[in-house]
Image (cartoon, rainbow over all chains, first blue to last red; front, side, top):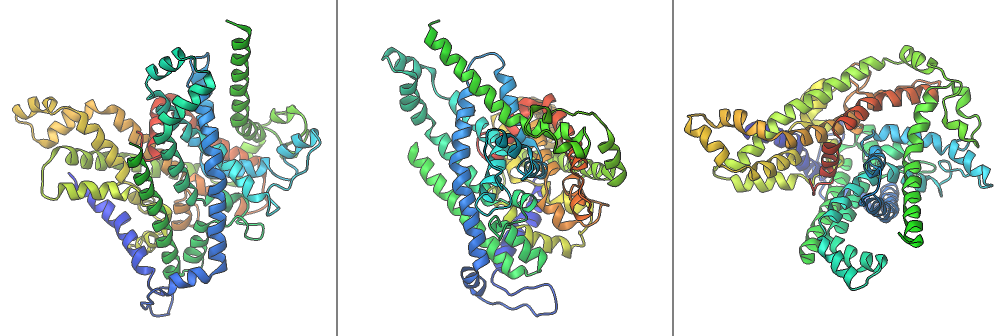
Length: 275
Length: 279
């Protein structure tokens, strides 16, 4: 019963994971050059490679913007739809729908919306702002990608927050009400502390997802202008699939995996301390 | 109701509507842009009429079908997504059932290994996976787009969690009747477990339908490419016609929209499952 799953996992998940680690220590390039074990060479090269550092910093910048903004927006959305008012299921569906759309489509549509002569600039022009070079200036390009990403992803975090909110015992609010706590005080002293584990889960998930940034810059800016939106996955793709430098790109993949693993382990630490 | 609470209610409602506008306008613009001429796409940008398909035309769809092999891509997407869902349901549910019921040496180890594999991000292994699939002769084949995503640690985890909650007593009657593991599984357990099957189907299906990086890496040419990568043909093969791109994008999103409307609840679960925690 287990066998098909084990074969699949072994061949397509475990083997490539191990290969990434092993190849990372070789100079493997598709072509005539013989493959040799090169020790830590690739990893040392990474930290002297300005494009790698830049891609990593871009990815961190993306995460630093997306994680707080998306978490706050998702929490607001969850609070809005966690009430008993008319049409709340309808609104929930609207906020959620972008989550299931293909990232390619989302990126294409937002690239058009944010174009210099696009709708967003058209509307902003009406109130006397802009035009803003959303995708063509290195200062605006990453925030624009962040905007598209938040639009696509907030619904997911909303659903997680919603399940967290619904798990808070009603009696806590009743007790707070008897004590005369205002809505804000209830939010501050009941909702937030009770929601702490959920907030941590959302933050960690969003962080991990943001390290996987690829499609949005690939479609919206091609990593530009001037490399300002090139993500680490884009660089791995360029080196591995573009230049066939499989040793080096495997080393970067392995490094990325270690980063994600560290975040996951920290999450587990934090969560178990919270309980 | 006091005036103050009424005002507060109104304020919150307004916020809810504004948020809805933010999440809807790109979709409205995508669909309406696909239904008017490209020359109209950048007209009246400062007026709300820019969100309406005026003058209405189906020209873009006609030209898009003539220019790209939309139905080829659509068929590929259906084949890839459909086969992965079917195979994935069988393979992962069996594995989840085995892990929740059978006692065998090394069960604990397998169990925790599967759980540990959940955190491997696909983007961190696609380069060596490309190498393996290439070595197996998989470039430009359907199986290269399907098989790597059949056995999925997260789906196994979801199944296992569900089956653990199904009481053994349900199966005991079947065992007493002389049914083996397989028959009990098929005739007793599966019919009880529709919700988890639906959630996993949606989780695998969404991922496959929208997947971009992997098909980009292992396919070239339209013979095996899914819709997500097919969209690129507009850019690699100029002139770029944005209205046609919007027509392509709108059509590509319709199957998902219909599925969503039919199975909303399972979608919430499926996508929250994507978050890797709260099924």
